[in-house]
Image: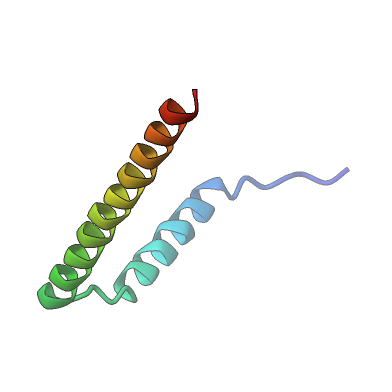
Length: 67
């Protein structure tokens, strides 16, 4: 059989070069976009929490009325 060549060091260098090249392609959002998206997520979370709490109260009072 033939001799095997260990290219592990070369593969690591190529991996990190590729990683660095891909990192430079990232388009980071500006401050206004991040602020708007943060407000949207917090608002949706609060609204969903309130909806779940109201449904829970309705079910709780409904079951206590039935039982």
